[in-house]
Length: 431
Image 1 (cartoon, rainbow, N blue to C red):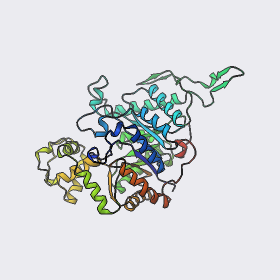
Image 2 (cartoon, rainbow, N blue to C red):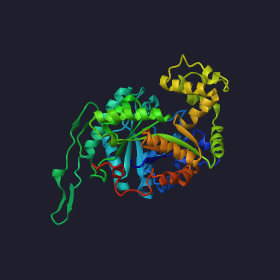
Image 3 (spheres, one colour):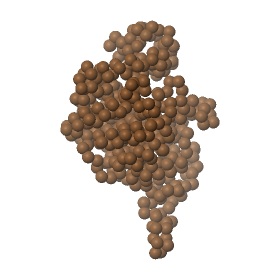
Image 4 (tube, helix red, strand yellow):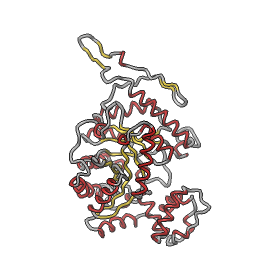
C-alpha cells in the first residue's frame, strides 16, 4: 500500500480560530520568521512530506487571525527553503489575479532555490473583496474562473517546458553559452492569455512544481483530474471521504491518467493530550476563547446568512430557522443532521464550526489520533493528511513527538526522506 503522506498546514498562531488568544501562542505569529522557520524544521524532523501555506488577497471582519497580516508566500518559502533540506514547499497562488509568466518564473525560482522542492497550490479567487483590490467590483463567475485557471496552468506548463534541461551548454572553449535549438518560444494565443515566451529562467530541478488543487466542488475536481498531483480537501466522515476519493479517481481515469497519479490529503485538526481527559481539556481551553459574536458571524454563511445574534446561544440548533437563508444547502443539512443526532445547541455548533472552520477534528491521545489516521488510510478515504495543529508550536510538537513515532512504528509514514526532488518523493517523474 505504500506510506501515507503528511503535509503541515502552516499557520502563525494555530488553526483554531481563537489560537491567538491562548497564553502559549506566539505574539507575532504569522510574521515571526524565526517561529515559522522553527515550525517548518519541526515538521521536517517529523519527516513530513511538505509544508503548505494558504493565502488570500483581501481581509474582512470574518478572516482568521492568521490571514489578517501575513507574509508573501514566495518570500517566506524562499527563506524556509534555505533553512530546511528535504521537506516540500507548497505556496498558494490564485490564477484569477496573477499572470502565467510571473507565476512560472516565481515557482521556477523557488524550485532552483530549494533544490527541487517547490509545489503550487492552484486556487481561483471566489470573493468580491478580492476583485475590489484588482480594479474590479464583482468577482469572475465560478465556472469561468476554472476555465481561465485551466488555460493558466496550460500556459505555465508551456513556459516551464520552454527550456530543455540541457539547453545551457556553457562551453567556455567554444564560446557557446546556450544551444538555441533547445530554446522554444511558447506563442500561446488563447481565450484569456497571449504569451510569447520563453521563460527567462533555465529549466529547474523538477521541470515544473508539484501541482496541488484545494477544494471539492465539481468544477474544482474536474480541474484536479486534469492537472493536479495532489488534492487537499475538507472531509469530516471517513466513509463519505472514500466516496469523494472514488469519484475523483474515476474522473482521473477518464482523463487518461492512472489512479496512482493523484494523492488525496484531507485536512485533519488533531487536539492531543496524554489522556482523553487532558486532550478534551486542551480542546475546551481553546473553544472557550471563541467570542460568541465572532463565532456566530463565521457560522452564518453555513446556515444561509441569517442573523444568528437574534437567538439565545443556548437555543437547540434544531430550532434555528435557516429556511429563508441562501447558504450552502448541502453543508447546512449535514450540520443540522449532526446537531439533531447529538442534541447540540447553537453554541455547540458555533464552536465546532468556528474552531476548525469545518475540517475534521479528532480530540484524544496520540494512539487515538494514529488509529483514526490509519483507519482512513486503510479504507481508502485518504492517501495522507494535511495536518492542522490548533495551536503552534505546542500541538505540532506533540504530534511530532508522540503521534509520528506511532505511525512510523506501524509502517504508515516514512522514517527517512527519499533522495530526489519533491516530485520524485511523490513517485512522480521530473518534467
